[in-house]
Length: 456
Image (tube, rainbow, N blue to C red; front, top):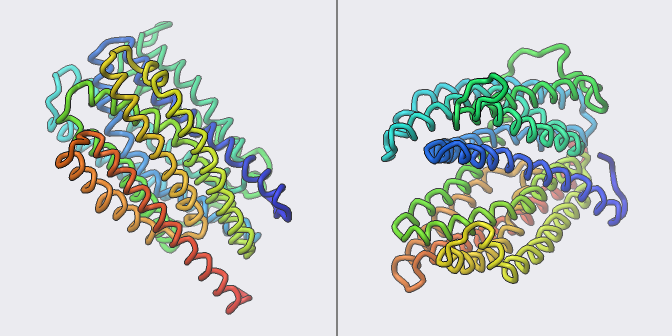
């Protein structure tokens, strides 16, 4: 990354960082998609087992690996301040944290998989597949978390196209091993849905190895000497990583888990309603990759400018991220409203499900507008390392406002299941407003601190 002096240059830098992140996020989404899709081609039991396993794996992995996202603002600020040795030290300590975190999660998951599955009314075969799938995935935790640190380091330097390349490589590799291990091709064992878990674990080891080679040999990463002169464990740096990372991880978990809870509450309605809700939620999740990618780009750029004490540039990147996200959200909302029947038809041929899905997709369109503000604002706040208040606001927005309001509207008005979407939209809107106010406060405090302490 480099300093920019014109708006045109800032737009160019922003887009050059965000677009590879977007492609990376879609590639990650496709890995999970192909796990489920290819398992469905084997048997219904394997589809159910992998779906159950994925629903447990996703919130646990995304929430806890979110702790490692703190590496991005830490390194971005240090690089912006031209403190390269400290950036190297932070990444090395991040490796230690990643390994420790992976070992802890491995132990907890291995101890809790059966109790979790026993709480569900699953057929024995589905239970076995879900259990073995999760066990297989657990053996990929260490390389996955190490690669998460590497990706944060690579992205913090603005080289998001490199992490895009590695992740794009992972998708066909995962599909290839899925083919070998699910269906038992070319002499490999025929494992059914469990094979997709083994394939994912193998893929994690491969992309971790590729990430290590790239950061060891390629510029500008080689100059950081990540793998030379390994330091001792330093608790102070671990605490810094966790102080920033834990609120980020919990915020992500709070956001993802509320959608799982809403889906569970939807189980009180008919199968058609549940299916229609899932269609709208699935498509909304895909479209969400845009504001999410912009959010991650905002963290990198704002962190870099804060490290260099260019407060005005940090503010401009914050506003640009919101403008870009809102612009895309209007486009996606328009597409959702105009082509909602066609979109629903891609997912189902059931007339009742399609009709209901077209109604849910209208709510999903408004859902995008709120997300387009709160996501990039949250990303900008992470660039300032302001995460604790952000986490509290996320809890209030989703769990104090969104979910209770959705429950009341769904159960005490004629809107029924659509009430939950109204609750989600209201929670996101509250989050967008409060986070925007928080960003303005943080920006003023940062600039005031610099004016009063120009040497710090």
